[in-house]
Length: 101
Image (cartoon, rainbow, N blue to C red):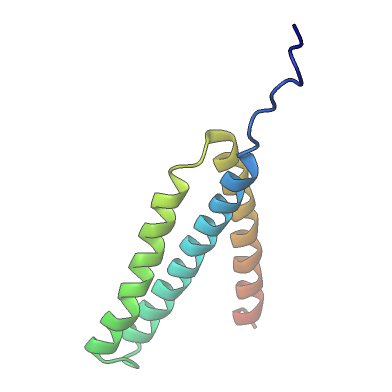
């Protein structure tokens, strides 16, 4: 009997990694939009209606990113969290240098 070629498992790791990356970017974009909304509202540059109009997409991006990220396996989530932390740290360092002058 000829067994044929061994079956290869589907490589779904790439798809999960892409979904995790998109989820992280959604969370980052939502967080930045939320920070901008709170800042502009606090400085009285936006009306209440404009504040709500900016806050809704921020909440949707954050919640959608959390839901999408929760479906990722543990090792990919750890790698993504580490990379996200590096990017956020780099952004915060840059913001401190810009506004520290």
